[in-house]
Image 1 (tube, chains in turn cyan, green):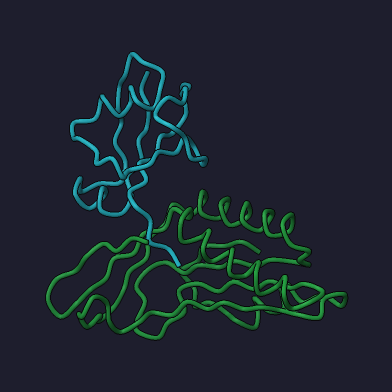
Image 2: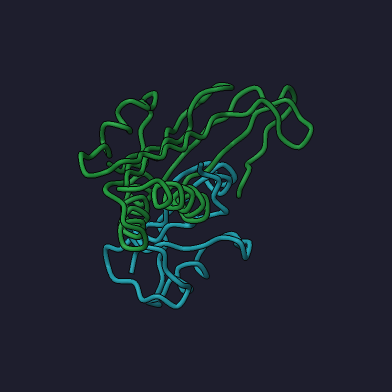
Length: 74
Length: 134
């Protein structure tokens, strides 16, 4: 399935864009990450839609996966 | 209220949002842009956010504050976009019947926000810039 991946912070800056569309035959966040053309640092967390998720989280058609690099709010 | 906005943050609004007749205390935390970091002079900062998820995390923090301490109300607002030295980046207000709970819940709210909110900070110096976390 095709999944929209949102990039933020330094990841978006490095990629030069804030969304990437990924095609995967898998159904987990890990499968989506494996389909990216770049490697992620271990400090990057994931979200599915608007909730934090583990790499093992199941994703469905229409879900958005967000890559959350170390945060700096406050 | 729980919000991420590009507008200048209002401390009056934060206070008004949590003030209750049955609360005798309001604790406020205001985070402001500091002029130095790691020995370097900061010229400006830019915050960006996953707005929808950040507001949801603020609401979760608010719910947690209500559950763990007897607080009346919680308000969390964070500003995004370019900010100058001295600008308020975040305003948190918590009301409670007595001051102990207000102080503790307010402290918890900023510590939780710093760990969980999907918000990113880019610092600019005379030469160069850096993404700062934590």
